[in-house]
Length: 342
Image (cartoon, rainbow, N blue to C red):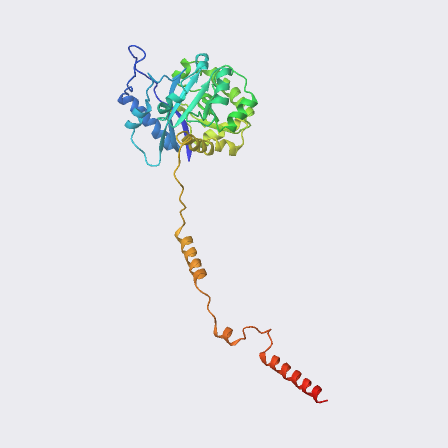
């Protein structure tokens, strides 16, 4: 089972007249839906079975104007047997996001519509917030931290304490292999200065990705595509061979697209059950085990039976017979009688 947890969708929101009105979900043309269908068919052909569509937001999530565009897309995509579609929200954090970016308890119902929450920090302050605060267990836990690897240099120093804390809390660090191929990134990421395109972006990706592997020591790494053009998609085995060039062992590179995303999706489900009231558990015993238990109980409840051989044997073999006592008494009487005669 292979995962691709970053397939960007067209980020196009309708303009509001006053800027504070609730926006209706945008509509997508038939050509855009056909493009997404072609991407899904190609991913399924390559061997991916779990696909996450990504909606990207810059700076902050405003509950008054934000709308979930992925619901509209998934309703129009045709279902495929054996393929799971997930909804992911990616928030790009910059200096304006340091005061808050909408990930608060008042917006829990808004974020419950997404299966995964990812953060893209672009400053040192937002990286500290993402690693120390927003990876803690809560209804708004962000389990994915995606780093801008295609920038000329990382906008912050990756400290071991921050990285270890995030990994201990269950977060993973995402590496999008589109930068290694020199492909086009999400236009909204480029406009937000969180990614770059071109030949220099490819060189920057390799340098930054090696730094991420060095700091994390190959643990908690997630490999996704982040691909916009269909020509940049690669098979899972090819991606694993590509990631081994960064210094990862073969098994760790394989886990980056199988075991790590699987455990991530399972942990992400805990956002909906955080501090929830669970019903009383019931013990389900297999039929074979229950039959053995019943037979054992029947044997223990039945009264003990005595065999004919046990009835023939004396009850207490060590006890002397009663005749011995009567013989002793008669001997004593005779001795007394002889003594009186003499």
